[in-house]
View 1: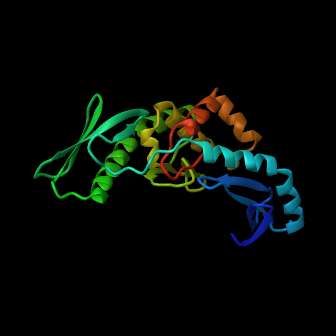
View 2: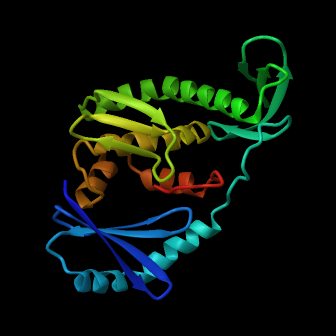
View 3: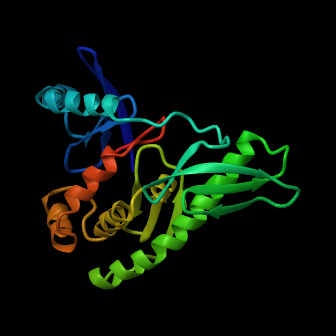
Length: 241
């Protein structure tokens, strides 16, 4: 798809404008800094897009304030007694040094991380992220299978990866879903909401009235799960859905 990128300045707000071969205008505000992006049909002029953006300034500023005020975790250092989350619950990290391959054990109030004495912070982080990835993949598989049956759809593939602006994405053509690694730290009902959200994209690509109708049908009350997810503390870089 061909794209053409321009920029608009509205006072103290800079808007990235992407002209694409699409039918409708899409306005997005991205965390953590509140970057503004408008995707618009190629036929639209910058003056028309400027008028549209001005009409949405109140909403844009509201989103930017929300991002600035959202509680954030400090960067993790993977030290003893540091707090880490798993499925919405906070655990204390316990570092156990031993001369053997790394291993993680989830206990009632702690996550025990067994590593060699000379293991660096970066390596501890990699070990933890691998553990989170495996836990999330194991957790979401039955959830996906459940909703595939309920919705009469079928995914070709799902994967977990680190993402900075989305909790998940879905390619309807390839029937491929990607889930954000950070979801492993969130409550079960929030994870399920994201999975249903992405599966609904197999019916409707855009977040329009038709999309909302599908969400209301399959997961009544989904807005509460979305709000819960977006009000939880997030990493020092964040995103919203």
